[in-house]
Length: 44
Image (tube, rainbow, N blue to C red; front, side, top):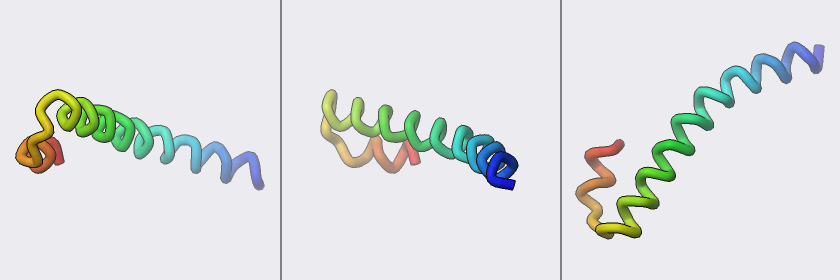
């Protein structure tokens, strides 16, 4: 049972983490480069 739960959580976390990480990286990059809050709204 824990193995199935792990597989499910890993599968879901992969997609969510990929999106979150990509968004965070983009937001951080935009903040560092420009520092404009407008870009945050566009990316979100």
